[in-house]
Amino acid sequence: MPYRRLPNTDAARTRALTKAINITLGLHPDDVAFDYKTLTRAKFFIETFKKSISLQRADNAHYVEKNSELAHLQRQIRMYITHFIQVLTMSIQRGEIAADSLRYYGLDAHHKKLPLLKTDEELLLWGKQLIDGEEARVQEGGTPMSNPRIAQLKVNYDRFVIHLKSTQFKQGKKENAGEYIQSLRKEADELILEIWNSVERTFAHLPAEEKRKRAEEYGVCYVFRPYEKQ
Image (cartoon, rainbow, N blue to C red):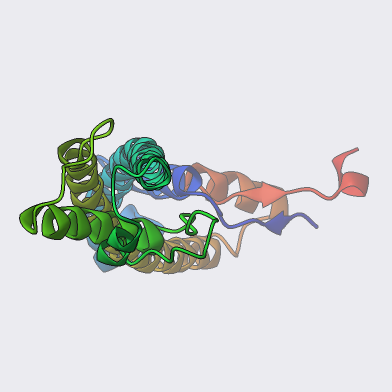
């Protein structure tokens, strides 16, 4: 015997509900093969479901675009931080800036390697330390750094911070939306199962083949096993 296969994608859920609703158009409520209250509930639900899925797809596309912009800004600020520290180090080696000036930036004169700049937190930390350090050093009479100037680093840092906060906010919205969509999917599955069970009960008195044919008109999906197809 073929078995029922409930939909497992949003498109299949939408098709199943739409087919069940459409076949009832023009029918008297007494002629519908499932409960009229369930039909009313399905009509209200399908629009919410379709709109929510559409909005989620649009939000996901926008989120991917924002992530691409953020990745670009991460590379930019990482480059500016790296270049600033390298130029600062060379300026100290040439004697243009005092060696003890590294304290302004939270840098160690004995540590030759660049700080780790892999995570957003590290980029935020070192970007702020360099900006604050340069401002403090210049205020105490130091010569401003050039190529890159701290203003160039600050512009890229501010852009990075703004996009990072925006992306984090959208990530929170995306997670909440995902939970909401999951609850809608659960409700859709419950509705479809309720409709299909009622339809099969209504046509239970018919021969098996005719019962399947009538049920399929309401969207019930039957799958034949390989050995049953012939």
